[in-house]
Length: 319
Image (cartoon, rainbow, N blue to C red):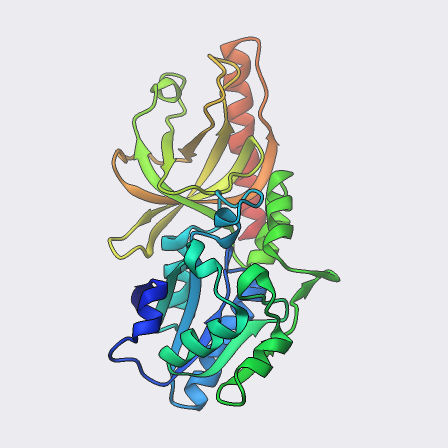
């Protein structure tokens, strides 16, 4: 899959080598079940019309540029999204640099410039898609602004248990540690990618060595606690390799020094590997318990043993 970064100026000047395209547009933070339906629809339409299948996202998130709440941290930062787009069959991802200049484009200007430059014959968006200055453009105005030159396909809301699947809903579930329901909304476990870095080696001294995972980008992190997890090594192309069952602690280690520095520490069950420097992905499967402070080291060791047994039980029930 090609990745093309676009500035507002490039969209005005034109781009060489663009093919007639079916374009899915959105933020796609999470690439959840609703987003996946948009991508599937775009891929199907592209195939039916022998067009190029592409997706357009905006970076940084428009809410960041406009000074709105909480979107410095993402469910799926951009490099992670690219792998998911490729799996969905997208041939090109356009990353539009969302800066102040671009934020001031009118809704009509976005359609007349961006869609024309990219030779968009079919555009696919979610039912709540907004675009243009202050988000004044809607799916209805999109039909008007294309003047029949581009076919507009609107994907209805994807509901689960009678409620719309959305990035906001998933963020709330993760905030409360409900990673199982978040998994249902995503269609896969919530995951963070990072690099294994040196820790204080305390886990090794008590018989439970851990891999300390430093996220490579600014991810949303679920509620502090202990989770059953899967641990995957990443290949050079960003695809996932071997998957291993694990227990993961997300927290500040209150039994020891206790700081505000949240760490992701993963104990791979029944395996001992030298992982320093490896690029990895950790997936949240089910919450075991909240993080807590123990009076003695022996109490902590006993609890970790119980956590491991609980994680094995969870994986056994899933198999």
